[in-house]
Image (cartoon, rainbow, N blue to C red; front, top):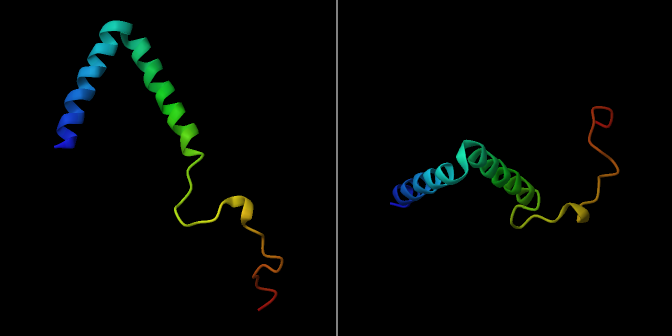
Length: 67
């Protein structure tokens, strides 16, 4: 049911944006939302994992020479 509602609302909002700003404005709005989402995705981290700042590199990496 959520896909049905989002499909109806999304197509209605898309039609309103194209009607008000034209196709150029609609593509600019969609592109800016996409870029904003990409910037926000850079701040995500997996739950339960330490941040990258607290991870220390292994001073003795595993290689074929050691085995």
